[in-house]
Length: 622
Image 1 (cartoon, one colour):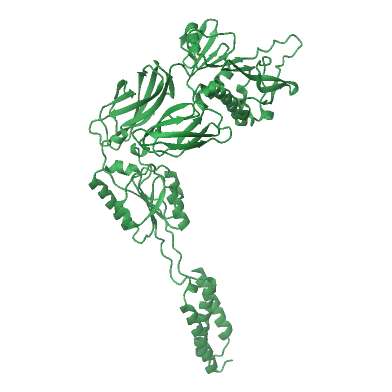
Image 2 (cartoon, rainbow, N blue to C red):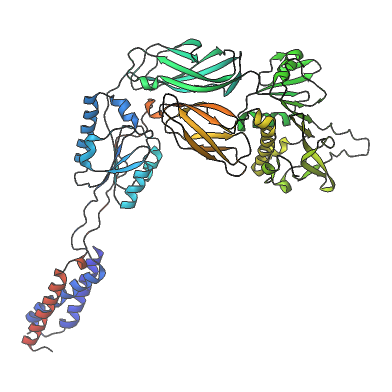
């Protein structure tokens, strides 16, 4: 509008300058000629200013249809219900966006589709992500019309949708549906142990009655637990204990929910993997517990996901189980330590486990903490000798420790030089003098041993930042090297015990190779596929693309493992995350056609100027 106002102002000014000072006798003729001049100049100026030739119209919206599997869960798999859903989608899209010519499908990806093909779409995507549709609408300068069942993974992205965007939540009839939404089992356990299994049961849009949950371990152990009645869109967590059968293997722990008149069976079963060993994976024994023990256990159990039993000696002959502080006899501690695949002894390194059942190829770490600082005498000041990390010599762990920020790490308090043929980390007293081995490694008859001297390593973790990362890298490398990678000689194995379709597969390496090739074969399928896993830098974890639901046997150098991919999260009922209605007020206007794009304005301006020239000549003007 402003362009036309400026052009009109120029036209009036040009007419006034040409005919505004004529006499009264010629005023009528001057008005006619001035009108011709003003109109011609106005049109020429409007062309130069890029003025529109017609009013702008609201931009047609981009139609995005959510085809995640949760839509099928809501309506069912019956042909009539699916066709009714397709008809509803078509009717809503035609009603709210009759002029739209762009339709996309969203879920786990974005795809273009013709509106005429909507009646044949299938809702089976393993995700409900709409960010790509929001970005597409913004790039086109169009509002977004989202047709969904209301269960959107990234609902917060809709806050960035263009002005005038609308969400239409398709109506659905509440159906009785309960699902096992989560299953918590330990990653590994020892044969004969009793483990705790926790399952989360979620109800859909309709209430569910009392139910039963069965927990099976390879079909050999069957435990049932009662599940209370649930109100709509609520959850409950039930736990039970399961005694593991004997025999080392990769077992499948399956939780099966039994609800009367449940309409969706695909979300009633959830399966996780459990590595059952014939001995404890790791045992940590401390006769002088301190902060170093706590932080080392965090790395061993958390970052490296190694099931670890820890025992603390609080006084001579007084032993406690770390965590629960339950009492335990020293005989039992020695028995379990003797059977461990990896043994860490902190404090009195002369302490020895029971010889009976001692693993022939186990690995161990001997950690000698620093003695307490001597009490100062009168007139003296007690100072703790500070040893600063000074270097990482050549050793089997050097590649994993080469990036340690040695100059910025807090000091240690050593208990003397760590004996061993291969120094792993050296330190200097006050950053001066000769370097002394703080950590050393050795191999005796195939048994790997790490010797650690001193205390204060927990100070790295407590400082945070790069120091905390250095603490994790140091102890991660130590525990990985012991017993060829935590007693697990597999070159790579899946990390998560529970994986769902649509989620990337997380892997952990057990050696030092940056590229590991694994073969994956689906049970009940034909053939196997090779997959190259690439681990960057000193990282121990990587991911690979998602796999369809099923049970897969994984073969890598050093041994086999089992990967279970459960049904997608889209089959689990949840509370809608978006509501029906407009996301923002207003409307986006499409670009109006410019005057310069048409030919008639040029012809009209030329005719007006010619008419004015003829009139001026007839009136005797020059």
